Image (cartoon, rainbow, N blue to C red; front, side, top):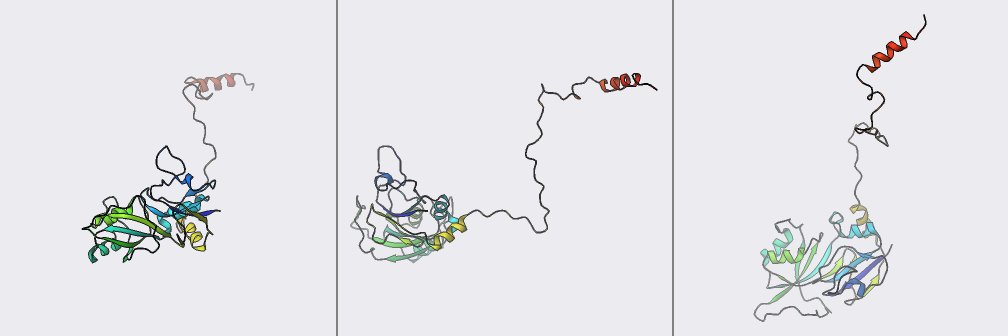
Length: 244
């Protein structure tokens, strides 16, 4: 079971194959049989986990495991208390309501690499950095959340997933990591639970392995192929043939 940590640069697609266009993961990672666990938008940056284990891949991205995902979010403007409270409580985005989140204003993250291309800059509108922690990760969720409270996202960096963080990884770099007990626990939580019978319920009978073959209009049984009264005539003929 392999687990890779990758710092995805801005503009890279979270897949290994693709037509001519934006670069893919294949440009940076040449390890066979590993696939991204979850996704990160092309215009987002930061931590992406990859594994060769299908169940582990599912558990990392499954909302059932409730694995926390930490983001640094640079937004337009200065969110007030009401906006921060709304983000924390859960935002109704129309197609779904987000789960409660953790959010707080922070200073610009230390040792942050420059983005290429840089974000749009407006001299008259300040920007604010937030740390946002969510336990789900639907399509463009963080961007939709901040836009909903009036502060569009300018830059989005995922810096931690569960026990794993970017640490010293520069954009485009990856390293191998150990599968922790926390991740194995998330794997068990995300696995589908077998259905249990209700207390006192009788066990179901096993179904026959092969159902009886249905006859079509051209395939008739010997009995059904007889004409009406054929059975009676056969009995009479047998009776005449008997000796006393």
